[in-house]
Image (cartoon, rainbow over all chains, first blue to last red; front, top):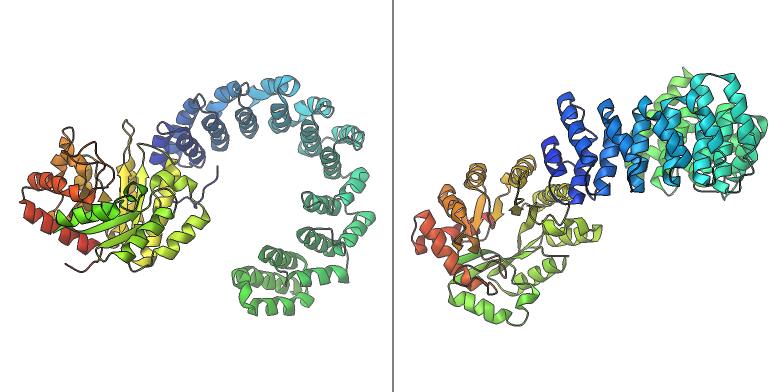
Length: 335
Length: 266
């Protein structure tokens, strides 16, 4: 849902009332808002009302009800959510699967396996993630099979899940099997899936996909993740790729700053220092803020004067607090 | 002197004969009119201010009606923020909650209502509220409105509940808050006994009357396009329900309108 205004006027009783009155949009807003309830008594009432809303005529309302039930974390919602896996509306099915994953609903494991095997692509995609959340070990074989799904998004989802499962269950054998299977998909026909496979391999400390990651440094949608994973791999060639990103104008500025910060965590680099100092005078506020955040992590004496100069510029009023925090962090590292 | 506290004479319904309509209003004793610039997009606000600039007995308000707040854009807000401080703009409105037609989601209406109250604070002008409840339970528009008015400290600015259609209990609750309560032609309808019962529950110094024209023509004009001159019929019924003479009611409501809209007494 999107609000034109920051919502300050919702109350629990208003949301409960809206959920059963008004047009679908009003009911959907209410279903969304009830997901934020935290008082135990109100939560109980909200869950009961949202379970009823799972049968609402409007798919928008049903989808919001699924999402909120996942947020509220009450097991009593599981049967209703399982039923919604067969909903005629894609967003409802997806949100039901997300919620069942969030609830770690063991009863939903088999229905989600069926969804992963036979459901529509929008559901298979989410079922892969949710199965891994519910029972990482049990889901492993199903996810290996899903790597070969004809839908690239489903294959991507399975790959990303396989990247985290071995760590969750601390199983070296599963890690090896996952790496072997993922490497076979590094030549996937879909570019986004290739990237996700490389990302998952990096999660498993396997650099076989590093060339895929480094080729994505100029892609605005993937550059940040590519830097993160190259830094995670942390080998000499990975750091060389990050060093190259510092001077590559095709790399988005946010990713360049992250690369500079990650570089400085691993090795001394004058170019990385220069990138971070230059980031302090970037045109966009969020880029300047990101430079300050990186300096808070890795800055030394060399960063103090530029940060102090930055604090004196009128246009940085909204960053004063983070600048002060960064200066404190640098000072504490000296001690 | 009669004061029509809520009219839409800026609208296209009056384009063909606006001057005649205003002349008939003057002839009927309606000397002052507040034109509500809040219907549809911001064209209504612009038109209302233009009318108020031209006629010394017309004042304007600006806002976006609760029906339309879902369509609002940052550009609409910019227009309201530009017009709100205008010296001929005497209030922010009509804003509020309409759970009956429900054209915009309730939550969007509530948020917009709160936002318009903030704007009213910035220009130190009262708020004209449109509050209409759902026709079936659960209701709650009036309850939500009173909460938002209290939380937004709107009572400090002055609050007009326009075209009141609530229950006598709602009238009492608004009166307790110090709101001005405005009655339209609906009070003359046969089925509107709860509204007539509400009139004496509003303190006399908080009573207002309005046409809300071109809508809601009073009996005996029902079915025709409403216009400010028809307020006479509403005034007669409100006077009767309040236990006042027509002249007393006319003078009292005109004084009340001048007070809340901060217009010098005639």
